[in-house]
Length: 345
Image 1 (cartoon, rainbow, N blue to C red):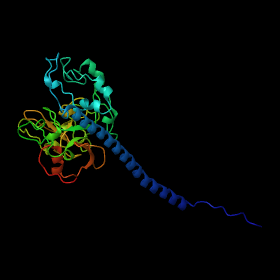
Image 2 (image 1 turned 180 degrees about the vertical axis):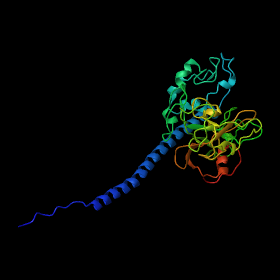
Image 3 (image 1 turned 120 degrees about the vertical axis):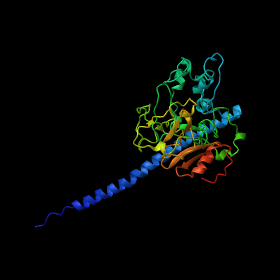
Image 4 (image 1 turned 60 degrees about the horizontal axis):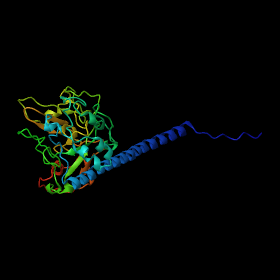
């Protein structure tokens, strides 16, 4: 009697080996896929900054200088509104030069940004009726694709891209946030001729992170390692006027709040659209501010890109700068006229 042919099948051991191999392949593949996606997002972020820096050049060609970081201006017919409430920021001024001419046409820059209802503080409060729609617009390339695109305040569009106001070292005179040496300030427009350190060595724009809009705006947020990139640490008491790294790293204590940083792309005030080079990119030290009796502020460049941040320079180039860059070099590229010798980075 001829026996039936033997049936071939996987043994349990063979099946487990195959499953293990598949698991290893997936474990190897997923990081590669994530890395490829992040590379694409970082490239898109680079393109966003490229549009902004090219617009900066076009603005200079047209106006003879770069935009004022936070301009003061008394407008005809609005003399009762303080000049500092004019305050249209660089992003608003650059809109006609970066394929956003329709946005620019919809903005009425002949009136102050705020002060039209007699009230200033509050989301959207005080904005001229003709500007309430335009300032709330979300512009796609104002957002880094690696971060979460979201509004922080009703009535305003946000942005991941900040203007460089210089180094902003905490100083006893209490004016560090305004006595800046960067490409932007609150007094006058900087010209190419003023950038004596060289345009390829002077930062113009970089990135920041958009905080969670559900996070409390007021103080009392407990500072943690998890939220340190998304909050701002409040001021010390009058008896200890200077900000210090020790004070700004009081983890586990309710000394932080959600910052206004990134909330309003139209607003040139430093808390909204400025960053400084005092701390390194993605600094482990949270952003800090002090208002009275002395004033100091640092807001660092931050991003979701692993290992560093994108920086747009005054010459129009975009470079990825490592979070481990030498702090002296980082501070040097934050200034336009510090006279430092900057090596390759």
